[in-house]
Length: 194
Ligand code: GTP
Ligand code: MG
Image (cartoon, rainbow, N blue to C red; front, side, top):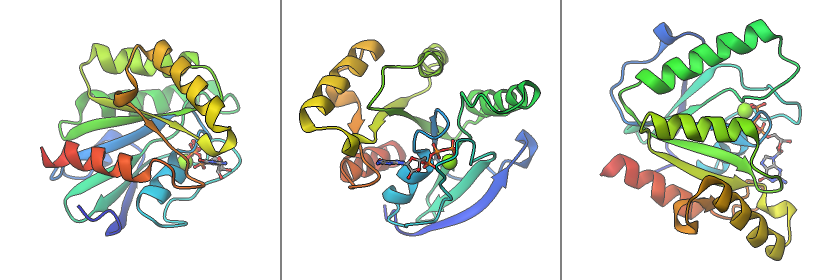
């Protein structure tokens, strides 16, 4: 799998705009501003394939990228962004849960969590929902570069406990330094190749 052979396909604003389900796909979910788009850029080794922003709420569509003409990566809009009007929030929820529930080619949801903080209620809700619906998911703890090695270990253990997972079931990551990129790449390739 060549993750650098990547192309933007389209932004999807409603379920009927989804591309034909011709390839397995991996979706990237997480709180607004957690670093989903930055993670994808790092994964595919492009500085600016996906637009990132220090202001939360940058990504508003399901953004589809093809990789190696064999799979799709899907950058999802973030959740937990208080400045979005209530009405808009529920239409996002409708779009995202409808997508997660019904997309038959979805092989893994990467759940991106900020390593600096405790597990937030919306992260917990998403993971509970994914477990309940038996959707494979991979937690990635990001922004590791903002912490000392010691603190990284400590916080990762706390998140593992909150999610009731063992350390081999998640990835420590930094979009800034590239920490964890190869680990993530090989795990994602496995979801598609098996
Ligand atoms: P939305 O699309 O708004 O939901 O945000 P997002 O989750 O796609 O986050 P985005 O990638 O736009 O990053 C948000 C901010 O966090 C930007 O200022 C990034 O530069 C910063 N950031 C993302 N990942 C990392 C990281 O691993 N380390 C550091 N230090 N900063 C990061
Ligand atoms: Mg984004």
